[in-house]
Image 1 (cartoon, rainbow, N blue to C red):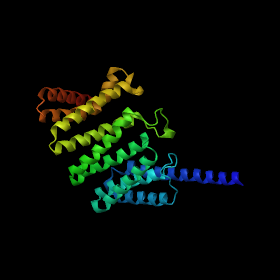
Image 2: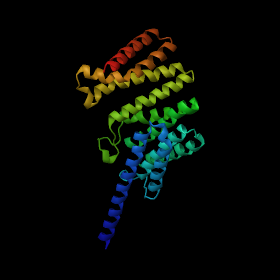
Image 3: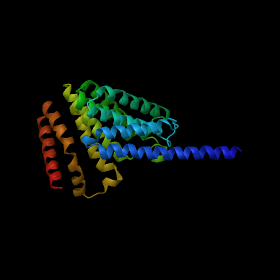
Image 4: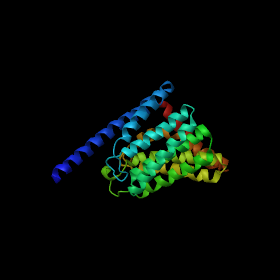
Length: 274
């Protein structure tokens, strides 16, 4: 009888995970396929709301790494936040991102800050920071959210958790972490710039260039590439050098500004050729 009950619980758990995966696919499709089509924003909103209704009927344990209905709910809330902003309904947007952040903060706490929970929380914070810059011009809040995202991500680079890479235990692709860290620091640098904190902006822009350099040294999929291939990949990152050039110019570091501007222009030309 105990074995039968355990088997029934496992079957229910497996079916719930399958349902979560199905809703995840719906949410990701709504984000990736419909995000760039303004005429379909209402449809995108309805599709995500339908997925959220389905996820609400499924069990959720924030401490469970495998069955992640809470994570998918948070992602759906984040995408709804962005959708409502694009629809010109900020009053409906704000509660969505707050709910997403609350969910992800709880998951991060109960799972003891794995790479994945820190990454997901940082991604949501960055979405809020970007929206505050683009839609509401609230640089103070953008600065706060982007700063929190950077603070979450930098330790993932230095002190991964788990120590040994294991997706089942909360690891995440190091390349994804570095990409999100670069984006977060970029948004943070722009917010610092807007606040007139030029010295801090220059410091963060320098760190972004350092991080980009490190990426081609430490990541297995990049470090052994021929120099010309590394250069081609780097061509899409001209903005990192451009931002440092602007910050250096404002800080009076003219030689640094000239060097970074030259690198940005060269990379931009290469990117056009590619």
